[in-house]
Image 1 (cartoon, helix red, strand yellow):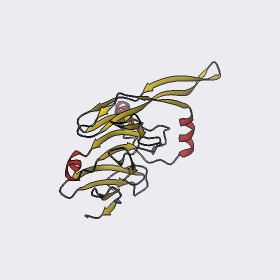
Image 2 (cartoon, rainbow, N blue to C red; image 1 turned 120 degrees about the vertical axis):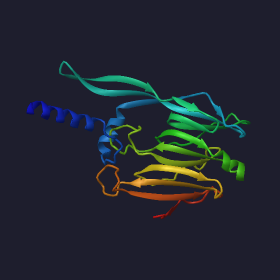
Image 3 (cartoon, rainbow, N blue to C red; image 1 turned 60 degrees about the vertical axis):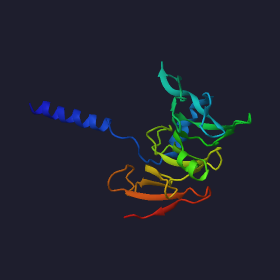
Image 4 (spheres, rainbow, N blue to C red; image 1 turned 135 degrees about the horizontal axis):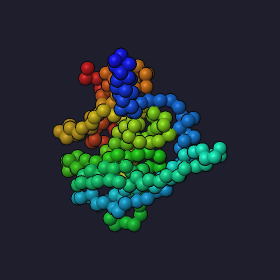
Length: 236
């Protein structure tokens, strides 16, 4: 009876570990770069989206990835090849969500396409701040982005830290708002103040995980000026 009880405890413990959150901060850049070199990716685009009441089209860009993993077969090394496409998205009047590697912008009166960025990153969502546009005629997109392999597994995916970015309506001045190596916790627009507020969490105890002992940081950005700097404030 004691044997079965111990076996039950072991199974429960193993299951709990298997279901843990992989969103961690791990410093292992050498291992990360080695894994990324074994992948080959090609850009593919979806059909353009018109942002209502503006003069711009949005072209979502994703990756077709060929992943190569080492495998043993009759004592010789070979490569096992898998492929996947990341242009899977949904869009509404103001928001585009999915798994994008870039976005290209096109004015309705031009055939020229402008890339949002030349960096390797994953865009989970982009939101047009329509209320801000109506108030002061300044157009912005806010982005939920994964820009670093923070858990050092060789991939940029939902297990890595999320960051907040912003750009102008035409894709210019794309920049990061939240600090490096901090997880974006929440953000919102206060239209009456014309400010973007957000908070992030820092792994302040340096244990590689986020928990209640870690520190929350609070910030705001003035949307009246497209060159304004992020300001940290201290409500507690």
